[in-house]
Length: 142
Image 1 (cartoon, one colour):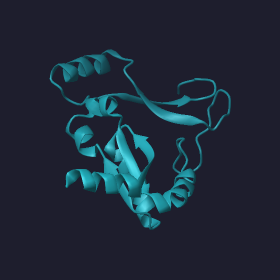
Image 2 (tube, one colour):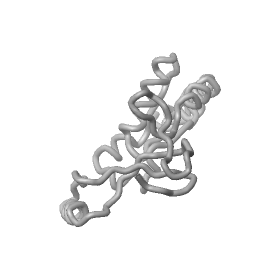
Image 3 (cartoon, one colour):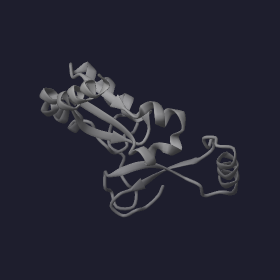
Image 4 (cartoon, one colour):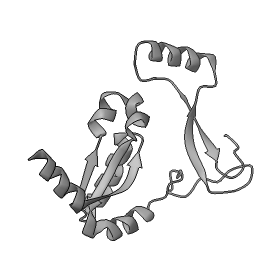
């Protein structure tokens, strides 16, 4: 019976995106549901139980109904993949002026490094990291 349910689901749903964490996927699930698109997440519980396993399972997979695939693609294309400021405008790189800027985390100081190592030893999620923006064009960090 499980095989037939999986076969039906495989025929009815198509993979549209993958995300590293389920919290990222939930943002897009909410947007798609608000537009009337039926969605299904896979591997979100595995990633939630241990985020380090995200790469091993291929991330959290977002599926949409086959007949809604084009509509879902259109909805997701309206969402910017780059960072926005408080006014909902794209952040500009101070070095080159490009608007292809993403927020990243880094382990650049001693405090971050020590906490990161401690977290790895005890299988915890690192709770102190330094956030910065990185330009995809000139690779400048600010």
